[in-house]
Image (tube, rainbow, N blue to C red; front, side):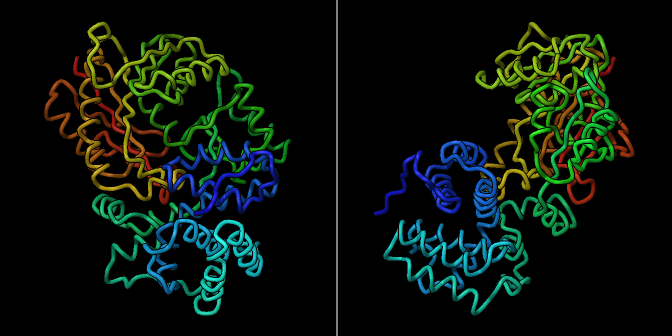
Length: 450
């Protein structure tokens, strides 16, 4: 039995902190982003140590399937027979050997063994043997993958996703490897300009003067893409001052498609954390009314504080289940935004846990999504617009939900649109990271007949 607790005030290295966080994520099901934020504060990680810690945690989770397969090839013991402590230490060591070019092989091995001596001393020789065996028999340029004749298993190991996720993506897209390769690239953070305070040209000038590499987004007229993958102190300052907020270009485009105008009434059915409500209010020039609803009352404060920071005062919030009808707002909105809970298969690059979702978890979603869409449609005025969107590429959550809705709601029709250089196909548009360099995203525009 090992003791995985440590005094928050004691010196904890990046590698030890990474081990503790991975242990918590695997044993207790913690979300990696929340765990990372908490651990950085708890262990007072800064500078290079903070960077290494974050890379190790995200990296080990992102490559979990691949690492498990490699360990299985190297270990004299079956993978299932290894203690969790041993598996995590091997994953951390192998991740450094394979993907961290700046870490010397000797340091990756020695630091892993030293960590093992603290955590599970009886296994330190075994861990040393496996890591050195990897260097001797494989190396990062000769990784073992399953035979491509077992295509889904090969993809699952090579790109580290569950076979359920691979199957769903294979059913929804043709060039699957292009998409999976895009999920391996670190996304560039994208900012949405607060046009109540500043325009995009002014923001780009500020960033240029601060030597922050950035460029305008390709399709959205309100976005700026940061080219160095980091949120610097200056960017944090701009966010805190309400000049910008973080929002992927795909989400910006979705609200541009809905096209709310000044003076309109907009309902955002599943609003948290608020980015789409903010974008709607900005397009409305802070004139009109945005009603932001969400099932989780504790998250509504994020919208309220965000609106205050941005200088938006037309947003009101309320706790509301998107699938339960509210007669008081029947046929009251010019635009209804319906960005439903989804499997997230378009944002795998940002949320590594999504890689390992099961089909059972995903297959229950279309019924929930349809219920929210059908209920949200009741709030649209005649001639009003209804936007349905997701951040998944799973067809059963996207086009199939829309087709079912159209069949049951003849008073709505699909409405073709264009945004930037992009044109919809019969009122529906799918964005992909490998093609559009955005999140994987689905946008559908519907109009209620007069």
